Image (tube, rainbow, N blue to C red; front, side, top):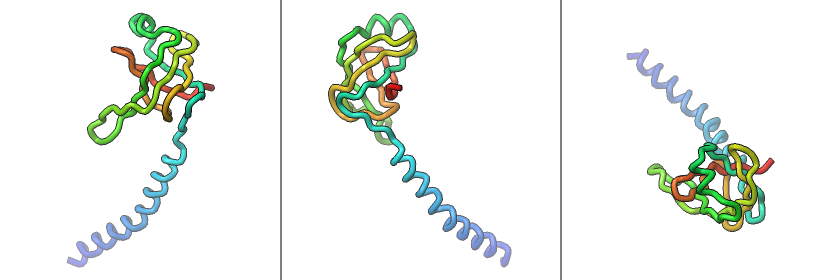
Length: 119
């Protein structure tokens, strides 16, 4: 019986010690998110398949979505305008509407492009 009490006491102690560490780590993650605003240049990463290259053209304005909630619903958070082809897997674009974070997805028809900050 004393052994069980000691185990529960030890588990309670570990929980109280670990809780502040976990909450601080979550706070740091939120602060480190990169938010890009209207006028910023971004790179759009894609698979490089011919289908994507056919669907995306210069000067296209493409809506950008972010997954939200536990059900992973897509919410439109902005729009980007395609400016140039950079290489086999990247387009350069400019944000024309909204605030976009790293990892948001620009979608046009069946093409999905991962938004990354321009280097």
